[in-house]
Amino acid sequence: QGEPLAVILADLDHFKVLNDTHGHDAGDRALRTFARVLRRAVRDADLVCRYGGEEFIVVCPGSDKYSASLVFDRVRMELEATLGDGRTPPFTVSAGIADSGDAADFGDMITLADVALLQAKAAGRNRVQLNAGV
Image (cartoon, rainbow, N blue to C red):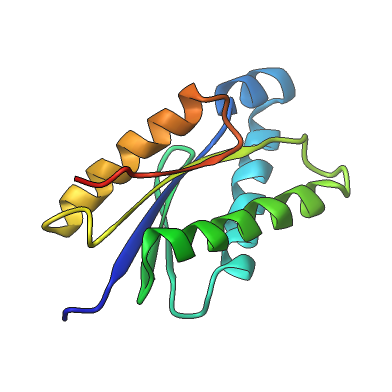
């Protein structure tokens, strides 16, 4: 519809280690905790979806990658505060972000956000990486 759109692809860092160390119940709690944090921290118009395994997508209508990165920084801060209660083993999350200015269609935006996510993981995790664009 000609409106800007940003896509955030987020992944829980070292999720397999969390599962192997603390058990699958702790892994399930981590996924539920992160989903609750996402819903609380994003805007009402944003769409939050589990993408598979420990990956989530947030679709941010009316946003570019820069404003979406501010949303995800809020998610990361909210997650840290939530994990302070000690009920779930601590974990971090990394994200890659692309927007409609980077890609011709939604599928390409997801691909570019995934590339940015891999860069965030390679750069040390617990961070947001914006797609560099085309």
